[in-house]
Amino acid sequence: MPVKIAILASGRGSNARTIINAVAQGKIDADIKCLICNVKDAPVLSIGEDAGLPSFMISHRSLSREEHESKILDILNRFDVDYLVLAGYMRLLTPAFLNVFKGDNHYRIVNIHPSILPAFPGATAYEDAYNYGVKISGVTVHFLDETMDGGPVLMQETFTRFDDDTLEDFKRRGVELEHQLYPRALQLIAENRLFFRYDKTTRRSYIEVKLHASC
Ligand code: GRF
Image 1 (cartoon, rainbow, N blue to C red):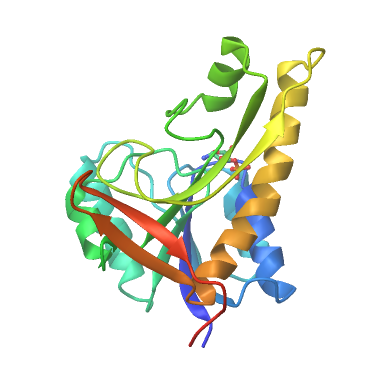
Image 2: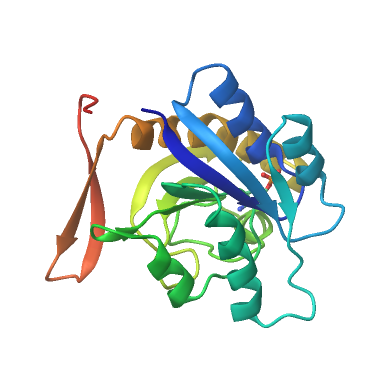
């Protein structure tokens, strides 16, 4: 059975497009139920519409965080969604919202972040890593917890920053890696290959990946 996902996004939509294409090509065994965006005129909305997905714009403007999330939940409730996939969604989610997606030792919400977390959390990770002068950076796919860009890591991969890189070169290389990593990470979820463990000493959840797919 394909895993049922909804995409939540705010902007350019290159990760959403990559996921949509990967599903169409059979690289992710998923059924994308809908796409929700919080920014009017964001390119990701037409990416969803052009792909024939139910696509919704729910602006957060003039709404409290709770009001905005409740509107998003109204839409998600129309669909039967296993996992929420954040693809450049630029807002924090409240604990009450996370709880709607509570699973075993994790919330069923996945995010991609353009750094090796916990380094460089926040909305300007490429700029922050580049300006820091890192020689290596990377991309993280993780499940959410209550903290900003926190939560159990599913996949991380690195890319090199070359000495003559401009910020644009650095970002381009990172975004290419994002587009490779996210479909592979989502396919691990689709194949039911994740064990969510809880370490009582560190009080952190972490993920073990099974070698083989299971039903
Ligand atoms: C990506 O760099 C992603 O890692 C971050 O936001 C950006 C979204 O880009 N969370 P796009 O909208 O997917 O093109």
